[in-house]
Length: 202
Image 1 (cartoon, rainbow, N blue to C red):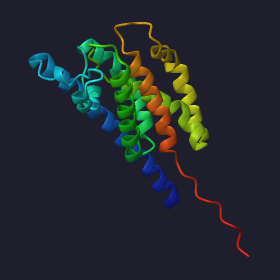
Image 2: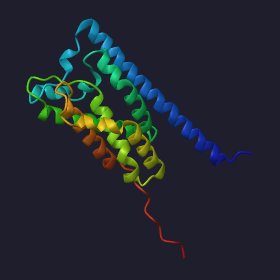
Image 3: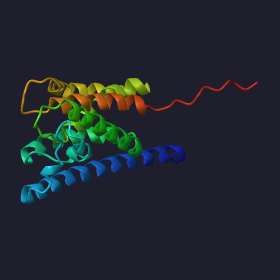
Image 4: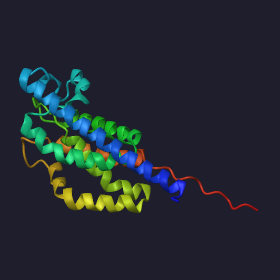
C-alpha cells in the first residue's frame, strides 16, 4: 500500500500546481479583458502612471494591469504566465506578497524617475520582478531545486535583462529596472525561515 505521507505530499504538490495554474490563467484573462474594455471605451487610459504628480500615486498598482494595445499585452503574456506560475508554486500567500512588493517598488521607481509627460503602463515591470525573484530565490532560501529553476529561467529569459538599460526611448526601462529590484528585494523579504536547530536529547 502507498505510504500515507507520500500520498499527502503528492496531493499537496498537485494542489499547488493546480492553484498556481488557476491564478495565472485568471490573471492573464483579466489583463486581456481589461485591454478589450479599454480598446472599446478608452475608459482605462487614465490609470497609466505619470511621474512626480502626487495624485498619480494611486495608479502605482493599477498601471501593472493596463497596456498600450494588444501587441504590448501579447508580448508580456507568455513570460508572465511562465514566471508567475513558477513563482506561485511556492505558495499563493507568499506569491501575493512578492507580486505586491514588485508592483509597489516598480511603480514608485517609475513615478520618481520616468521622463516628464510620459505615461507608463504594463505588466513588464512585474515580469522583470518575477525574473529577479526566481533568479535569487534559490540562493536566499538555500534550496537546490529553486537554484536549478533559477538557472533554467536565466538560460531562457536572461537576455531580457538588457531591458533594464535605457536603449529604447519607447520602452520603460525604469519599470523594468525597478521591477527587477523589487523582485530581488522580495526574495529576501519573504525568504523561507528554517527551523532553529534543537539540541540533541540527553
